[in-house]
Image (tube, rainbow, N blue to C red):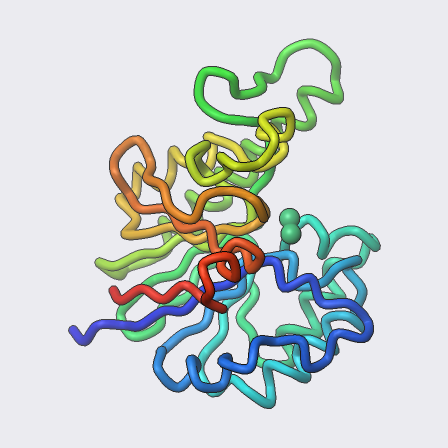
Length: 237
Ligand SMILES: [Fe+2]
Ligand SMILES: [Fe+2]
C-alpha cells in the first residue's frame, strides 16, 4: 500500500487575535503531505472564539485531512466541547478515545494526562484527590487502548497531547515532569505495537524519544519545532 506522508504540530495556542499567525509554510507543506495532525493546545484559553481564529487560518491554507486532539489549554474555560465543535465544523476530525483510518493508516487519539514516569509514576494511594488524579490518567490510557483496538489497519499512530515517555519532556524543569505526561499511556502504545506517537505539551522538551519497546515518540510542540527551524514534523509511513 502507498506510503502516507504525515505532518504534525502541537501547541499553536491561538488567541482571540491570532489570525494570520500560522506559519506561512503551512499551505506549501499541506501540498506535500496527505494528513495534518494537530496535537492539542490549539487555543490559549479554550475559547470558541480562539478556535474560530484558528479554523479561519486552517481553512484558507490546508487542503488535506486534519486530525486533532485537545490539550489542557483547550479545557481552560470549561467549554472543551465548544472548541471541539468549532474545529469539527471546519472539517478537523477531533479524537477523544476515537480512531480513524486514512489511506490505510489508523490514527487513535486522546488528550492524555499527567502523573509522571516509570518508577516515579504517581500511584492511587492516600487522599481521594490523588486517587482521582491517577484515575484520570488510567482512564485516558484505557480510552487510548480502546481506540487502538478498533483499528483494523497494519499501520497505526497514536495522537496525544501529553507525553507517554520521560525522554521527550527532558529539557523542562524536572519539578514539572509529573505534569508533562504519564507512563500509563505507554502501555497501550507498546501493547498495540503502534508505529509512532506524536504529542505536544512539553514546549521545552526534546523532539524525539522511544518507548521501552522502541516505538518512536515525537514531541511536535511548535516552540520546539521552531527552535529546529521547522513549522511541522513530517514522517512517512
Ligand atoms: Fe502548550
Ligand atoms: Fe499543554
